[in-house]
Image (cartoon, one colour):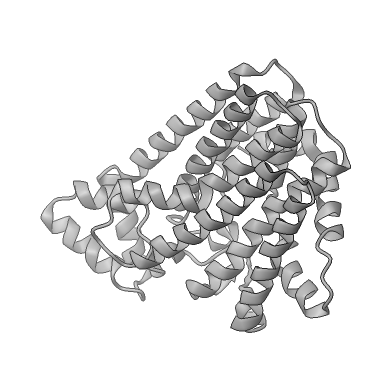
Amino acid sequence: MQDLKDKIIDMVKDDLAAIEIALKQNLSPQLDLVAKIAGHILFSGGKRLRPLIAVLSAQICGRDGDYVKTFSTIFEYLHAATLLHDDLVDEATMRRGKPAAHLVWDNPSAVLVGDFLLARALSIAAATQQPAVIEIIAQITENMSQGEIHQLSRKGKLDLFEAEYMEIIRRKTAVLFQGACRTSALIAEAPKEKEAALGEYGFNIGLAFQMIDDLLDYTLDTHVLGKAVGADLKEGKLTLPVIYALQAADAKDRLVMEKIITDKDFAVNDFKSLIELLHKYGGITYTQKLAKDYIKKAKNTLAVFENSKPKKILMMIADYSLVRQA
């Protein structure tokens, strides 16, 4: 896993450096407080996966340069905005190994800086003067908001089924990846076939990425994870490993699982017991398999492109999405 990650980073180091510069240059806050809070979430070790796949999607269509890097910041600003808002809604205490922004400052400031980042993303989209691009970015913000509201409305509910879970992660995560790829094809003036293919690549990567992210909650390594162990569960979020195992469990084990899930102050040993039951009833294996299926679909969509360095990296990113540990 580390070898694959290192290979990808080595191949994209120049792009990542340019993205980092663009994120700082295009933030353009007028107040120091905005810069501090935005910087707390933006420059605290994020993977830059969303802007990177935007850049690679433009490159695979034959376009590169500073404008592409500037455009890619849209997707990191959108992502950072949702993290600020989500951490507050979820009462999270840690993000990327650091205290959540609303704890360092206060709730109103975190909300408003999240709003600022959303506005910056829309402003950069508007600067393209392409209605199709602006429409996609607007739709992304709508979808992400509704996905979070949907998840919030089902917080702690034990009757959440797989189809509903998939709809939530489609809105929360997949549409942002999809939009990053598709809009890059638009600014590169790629043919419709290639635009659609990249959109499908991003959509499938996004679904798989979120599933693996949800699996990572069932680890006991806070240092690697960058947030509290079992954070999703304590926040009342039922994700696919739990949903599947609850449906498969016998009556006795289901009661045990329900007791742990509904106890926000569960002990480490209880959490270990839950993980054992997730393995026993196939929740972990099922989620891994489904994520693998979506990664396969993502890679297959790139068949319309000739072999190139950007295509190779996009394929490698797909593989890495399955084996990452944070």
